[in-house]
Length: 304
Length: 332
Image (cartoon, rainbow over all chains, first blue to last red; front, side, top):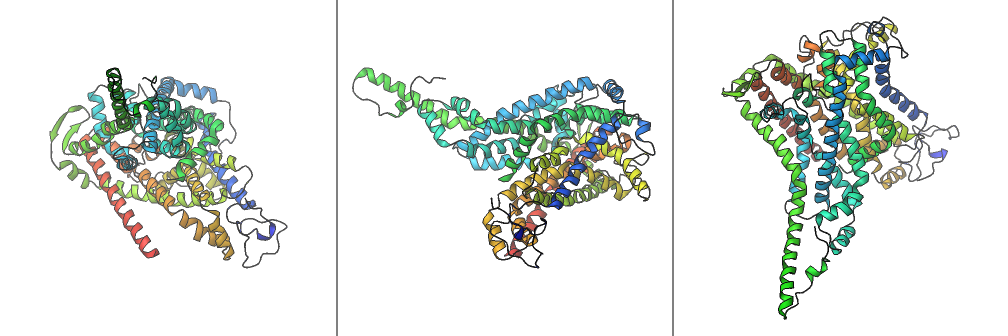
C-alpha cells in the first residue's frame, strides 16, 4: 500500500493541506488504487446507505401504527405503539406460525442438501481428473442462465402427479443443488486444497470417501459457511415457484405475505407487520455475519 | 471402507514364485482394481446429484413445456391433455396483452438494469478508496439483498401509493404535484424499477468491487506516470479491466429482469396485481404466465408463454453476442 501525500491527492480526495490544484498533475506511482476517500466519497456512501436502510425503517414504522395513521396526510416518522397488536393480527390472519415453521424446514433442507452436494461436486470439478470434466462444468454454468419460468408448468403437473402438490417437497426437491454452489465450491477448492494433501492421504491408503471426509470437508469449511448463508438467504426469500406450488393452508413466509396482501382489503399495517416478521431473521443474520456474506459474494464474483 | 493396507502395497511389484504369495498377489490385484474403480467412478458419483436433480426438475420440465404448449390442459383436470397443435401459440401471439407484457418486460428491464449497473460501478469505485468503516458501508449497501421480493415490493407499494403514500407526501411537501404511480404507464414502470434497483445495486457493487481489487496496481502506476487523471484512469484502466465482469452482470441482470414477478404482482396486489394494472401497464411476462396458468387456469397457453420467453432469451443472447463481436472488432 502506497502512502498518499497531499501533493498527489487528486479528484475526489480533497485535503486541506493540498497544494493549489494544477490543471494536469503527475501522480506518484501506485496512486491508482489505494488513495484515501475524501468527504465526497463519504457523503455519497452515507446517502446510499441511508437509502438502503430507509425502506426497512419505514416497514418498522408502518408496522407499529394503525393503517389510518400510516396513510394520514402527514405520516408518522417514529415507530408507534401498535407493533405487538399488528404482529398478532398478521399472525392470526395469514397462518404465519405455520409459515415460519415451513420456511425454516424448506430453507434448512435446501441449505443442508446444497452444501453437501455442491461441496462434493465442487471438489470433483476442482481436483479430480475425469473424462468430460470441462464440458460438464460448462453445462453446470450454462444451467445458471435458465429462468425457472420456463419449467414451472410441467413442474406443477409433475408435482401433483407424484402427490407432492401443495407440499413442501415440491419446493424443496427442485432446489436441492445449485449451479452457483458447484461453481463457488470449485473456485474455492481450486486454491484452498493443495494436491499434496490429497496425495498424502492417498499414500496413507485413504479411499476417496475418506479423503472427502478427512481432507476436503475441513478445507472447504470456510467456503461452506458462506455458501450456506447465501443459500439460506435465497431459499428463505424465494417467491415465484413457492407462490405457484404452495397453497394458502401450507405456505412459506413469503407466500403467506403475498397472500396477505392479495386479500380483498388488506390492512397495510398488518401487511407490514408480516413483512417485518419475514425480514427480521435475515436482518439478524446479516448483522452478525454481514462481513462474511460480503466477503463471500466478492470471492464468488472475482473469478467469474 | 478398508484402510488397513497401505496403498503403496498395491503398486508394489507382485512377488513371484512361492504359491502362498500368489494368493496374496491375487488379493493385491483385486484390491488395486477396486482402487482404480474407486478413482474412476468417484468423480462421477460426486457430480451425479447435480445432474440428476437438474435433469429431473430443470431440463425434463423445460422440454416437456414444449409438449404441453401444444395441448389443452386445464388447472381443473391436470391429467387430461388434449392435442390442439399451434392453437395456444396462436392465441398468445394474437393477444395484445402478450405484446404489452413483452414490451413492459423489456422496458422495465432496461430501466432497472442500466441505472443499477452504472450506480453500482460508481459505488464500487468509491468503495475502492481507502476508507474508514469501509466494511460497514459494504454491509449496509448489501442489506436490501437480505430482503425478500415480497417484503420489498410491499413496502415500496406503500411508498408509491396514490393516497397516503410516502413519496406523494414528500412531493406534496416540496410543492410538486400528486402522482398516481401505479396507474401511469411510465410511473408504474419507474416504481417497479426502483424496487429492483434498490434490491440489487449493492450486490452488483460488491461484484464490481471484487473485480476492481483484482486489477493490477502496475496498470494504474503506468497510467499515472503517463499523466492520466483520476477520471482518465477510471475510464481507460478500470472500466476496460472490468469488461468481462460488466458483461457478466449484464447477462445476469438481463436474465433477472426476464423473471420479474413479485414486484409487479404485489405493487397493487389483488386482481390488479395479477393482470399488471388496470391497463396491464406494468404486466411482465412472468405475471402474464401466472395469470394465464394460475389465475385463469389455462396451462396450455401458459406453457406457450414459457416457450416464448425461451425464444426471447435466445434472441437477447444472440444480440449480446453480436454486440460483443462488434465491440471487439471496433476495439482492434
